[in-house]
Length: 113
Image (tube, rainbow, N blue to C red):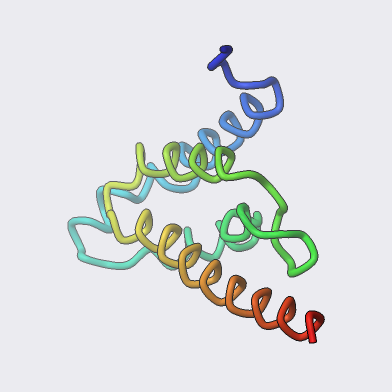
């Protein structure tokens, strides 16, 4: 079994790494010291579609797999001194996944009638 990342996943990891170095690392220590939530970074993550990585394109997500999402979380967590940013990415994903699951369940039940 080959556990190496595909070329596509390696490119995605590099994209997430570059984002973290450019957009997260420069202010991470300062926001920790000031106990300030980094809304600017969250807005940029939203702008680049990071919040929608694990969700289907039909509902506005990126349509990526779970491994791509894990790579994004891993790379951002390396540089996010403030764990709130890291937790924001995970929390939004969980909430949206719950809502999506509920809606898809209702839709399936509707068509089953």
